[in-house]
Amino acid sequence: MRRARLRSALALDTTSGILLLAFAAVAVIWANTPWREVYHDLLAIEVGPESLHLHMSLGQWAADGLLAVFFFVVGVELKQEFVAGSLRDLRLAGVPIVAAVAGMITPALCYVLVVGLAGETSGLHGWAIPTATDIAFALAVLALFGRGLPVALRTFLLTLAVVDDLLGIIVIATVYTDSIDVVMLLAAIGAVVVFAIVVHLSWSARWLLLPIALVAWGFMHASGVHATVAGVLLGFVVPARAIRGERLSRTELLGEGVRPWSGAVAVPLFAFAAAGVSVVGGSGSMIQPVSIGIVVGLVVGKIVGVLGATALMTRFTPLRLPDAIGLRDLLPVGMLTGIGFTVALLIAELSFDADSPHVSAAKAAILVGSVIAAVIGAVMLRWDARKMRDPDMNRDDVCDHDLDVIGGRTAP
Image (cartoon, rainbow, N blue to C red; front, side, top):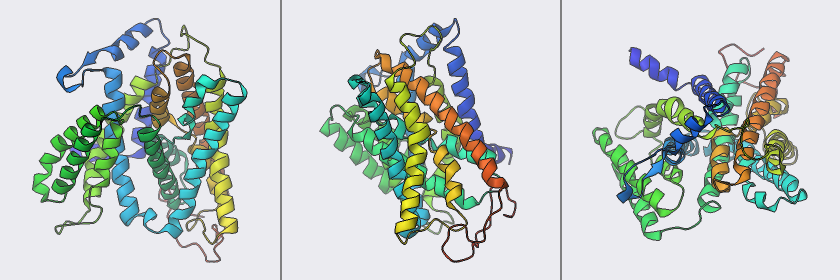
């Protein structure tokens, strides 16, 4: 019973968000003390079998290995949403999907505009950095400061964020892959197929899933495609409807089993490995077109893209916001999508060479932009929660009936 309560606590949005922030804060503080070299030397330690091409630094293991766990959870959640959740009905999912697309395009344009006008052509390869949304961080802020707002707002943010991450994964798999070993890629896909077969068998065979997943991850890493893509593919092949007389679908079962490890271990450790930017005594200026472009993209581009697309869709198409959600609710949600953090840090590492002067500036900008978006988003959430709500917030000429709110109170 005690173990079950612990797992439930670790799976909460607030818990994972707090751990993420704590580990990132430790990394930033450590990297700006006189002992910063100890931090960087720790992450440079190489472990793993050379024969399997897995002799990597701890920093690489965090980016390629730990984040694969996070992306598996993302894949499972996406599959569940597409098959049995909010994405199964395009009429309901249309607005957050379009908002997610616009919320990626606009920050990228902001970044390219800032960097291009400054003539910093070497920084243009980082155009995708401000397009990402950190699901764990954004949902944690919503859970902490969105009490009293409709629960449907969390579903909207989750839908927007998972589509955002899906597009981000596609960008990572295509734009940031230098060369592909076709044989290794086919072997990885073969392992995913085997995983798909086994995950449909009796649940007693579930012990086979982890070794098969590790094989798929290893082949994907060897192929040249970023290894986190294996996590998403594995999540996609898990059945999202209950089978073999089970009460829950296997996406729900595996999601519940892996999510505490992702939120409490994988993502915080990646944040610790990636967020340690040495501002004090670091090399290169932290203020440069790349960093300005990232902050503008996250803080301005995201909210403009999300709100602009939503306003256009609800005004000029038959699509409407979900029940109980109004356009004003998307002010804080649009700002929360500017919390890039995990995926943005990963893309920053993929965008530039390790010795590039842009790397530290990009990471510092991600931290600054994400904190600004989180703080403004939190303030907006409290402002929104204090305002009276209309009987028909989504303007569909039907009184709202979904009155469940974050925190359990009845909406006013």
